[in-house]
Length: 256
Image (cartoon, rainbow, N blue to C red; front, side, top):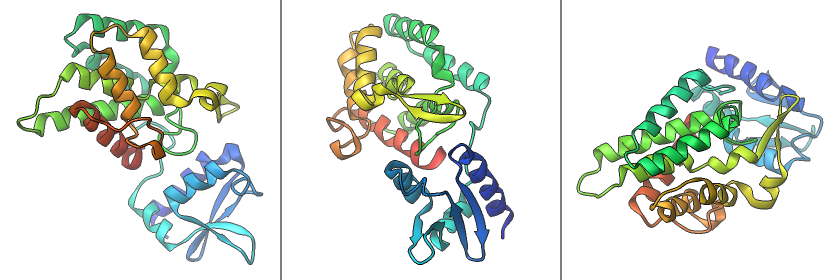
């Protein structure tokens, strides 16, 4: 067993310890001991299938990670915390906010984060990406950085940088009230069930963010998952919305 795989199994055990799920290397598979936790939780099951290609042994009745999933684990380190400290990521966020030239937009974003400091500890999801303390902050910083990088290399397109930065910072803002920690476990709130993060995020910025570009920001939030199947009521139609959809998807699939 490679050192990377050995370390990733340890990280998986630490990550899923609150759910009482254990991963054990067993020859050419990783056996999952979970006492039917995965079977009884469709969203967790789908997330583990998406990330690690888990399968079920019908004869012996256990979930496992096979050769294809092990190949993924060898290529990528399992994350259980941000790559940088929350303080460092917070400083980076405020540097990006300062880059916004529109004073009304910048000041309303500042005021929002001053009032909602729980943003810095909020996870990015329960099961899928950046699902650890500070995950939402890390995902947000990655989205801003990637969006600005794309802006630097695209030629002959008009991009509103203020809108790009603000949209990247706020695209997942609804998650601050969708998840909470309980005894180390990420729990889904009533707001998640009633509104999900896109609708709730639109509600937040509609009341908290002041800008003549508010409609364009709402479009970015509404379209950042691209299709109705993925949770967006509308597909991206602006340059800024397309960039943010593509880069936040990259962050969620590769970096978290």
